[in-house]
Length: 550
Ligand SMILES: Cc1ncc(C[n+]2csc(CCOP(=O)(O)OP(=O)(O)O)c2C)c(N)n1
Ligand SMILES: [Mg+2]
Image (tube, rainbow, N blue to C red; front, side, top):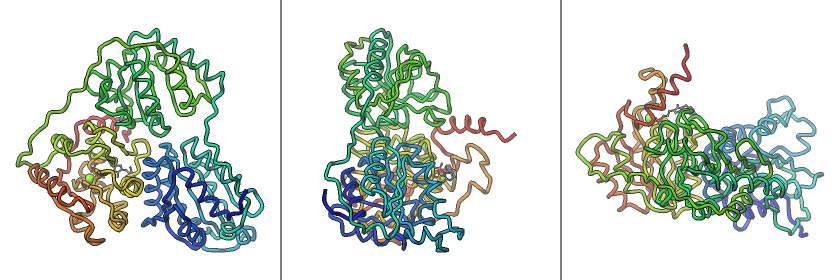
């Protein structure tokens, strides 16, 4: 045990989770805690323009570093952030959401202070958060703050979901006896469940005639990637990725057969997956967009599903059989070797830029060769997402999108967070003009930190994805025209920006970008209002049918 203030203890524990930057916005209920952050060795305070962007940034950071943290002020701050935290909850992104709250005396005496509803209730906002966080702690003078902090941080790490910590102004500086033992971040599987799962799964795989592996989002959130690689190596079974699982395993892997998205899969993949008698699915999530508008057709009796915290073989569910144990145990037990053929995805042909207007059909093909190894590629909901899904990504790329939660504007904050997490990795964002207008000001922080991502802004005069679903010419799908090329220059000179309308101009811009590598690049790409990737046009039709108003 050593003496430490509660605030410093929390920061020490955050470092144990690999968190070295904390995002947020100041407020009078968190200022003293922010002093502790600023003074704390090994932790940096990263201010965001608003709390929503801060939440998105901590999400982007967590997707790269394994966990993130956000500090907001009571009421006004935390409610601005709640959309971002709910998104992290939906998409299994671990964020420690710390809220500076009024002093214990203020709360106990139900005083009429600012940022309350004026009714003396201080737990309303925390109650809201209880639905979008996996554990909550209310630090005070009496409870054991160290234990409480350890409890919620462990839950955050193991469940890969946000947690909520309320720290009143008079609590941050209370000295406590800090335990010296590191956090216990170990998964404890139930041995019987584990053994039964492994036996049943191995027997099933060994009898299979046409097994196939699927890789999806939870394979990244719960760090399954090296374990899946062992599985693929040992068994030789081919694999396909879902959209939310894009690039978790290198797309150049010899067993990779393409993307599985129901009727919108890479050619040949849908048949191979849906006719398989044994589908080993890592971290599968069949949400509307991820399943190609619910066009997947998987036979539940053919599935072995390995999730972060449970596993399933056909209809038998094994709780407390954690990925960390199930995959290695299965790899060890299996004596199966796949001997069937492996179809390979056709490598898209290289095309040469012409002097014609940019259209989605060729834009993504033209961009593809410029993406670098070890990149972070971020795609915003809209035409950007559906276009980027269709290009092969280079090895060791991290692909970030928000396909389940789909809150537009997310990616500007996520870009900021990802760049803070990995400033030296090439990072590229594709975003639509409509989404950009929600969170545009966060570009100023990217510039002020001297970060150097490349941003492609697809300027198509509004909400094209929505136009395809409903109201193609309606005013609610229009947005004000901005001068995007000028915009980033109002923040600083740490940016190079250009505006392109043709394929030749795109090629030229990509060369020029290389000459300005030390700056952020902001490339505005003019696109036609109704132009969109084919994949999106088809899925939008399905969505329109499902959401019919009459
Ligand atoms: C926070 C939030 N508000 C509204 C929506 C509904 N929405 C989904 S996509 C979209 C339009 C996106 O437009 P843009 O970014 O320009 O994409 P593109 O034109 O390339 O399709 C809107 C308004 C949403 N998903 N999230
Ligand atoms: Mg648009």
